[in-house]
Image (cartoon, rainbow over all chains, first blue to last red; front, side, top):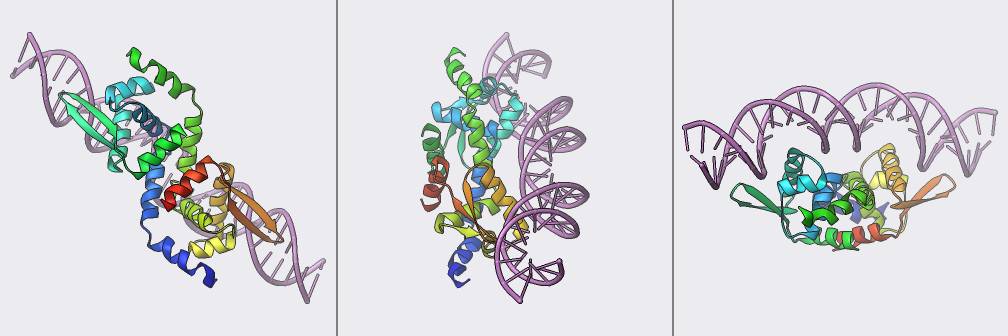
Length: 102
Length: 102
DNA sequence: TTACTATTTGAATAGTTATTCAAATACATG
DNA sequence: CATGTATTTGAATAACTATTCAAATAGTAA
């Protein structure tokens, strides 16, 4: 089993993989993936608009974008009472965007 | 809100997005992502080997590959008692592989 | 056939995550 | 400051998913 020594080390040391799994997990939910899809098509969309477009509640959207925010897939911008979200450009969202447009 | 009519239709009709979310969800788990990572590096690996490399039980691996199998991310090949799994080449696993190697 | 190895399966439980709803915050306007 | 609009938050519960373990299956070899 000496053959697998290197990869075994890699798997256990790489916290990248854990981070990756979290990112995949967060877009592994229909609501959040739809939000990402939406933000792949529009530069920024408000919480209220998202709720209307996705046919869901403001609360669901707010909880959802919070998770996307935590994993730095989106950023927020507040303009008076309205909060707009936009996709952050990074390796993960680039991959996601490319895959969605494919 | 006429501006969003098209995308709203798209979001509700596309079952691709649902399928996508499932695929992301399945690699949104550390064990399963590790298995994919492993299979990105080796053409095929048996259940027993995976369990040893990932420091987990045979049962966990078997349950995990079953999910990967269900979403057609891997294929199985049986050789006497031993079952080998290999990554299936499709759009999703290609994206995954590219992203992992980045 | 018995014993052994490799893997799968299913059911129970433990753990995690989503949904819901009411209350809280933040900002704008009369 | 009271009212209205937009969003966030937190807590309860509902729904889902992972883990564990024992039993089952399938193939091999004595």
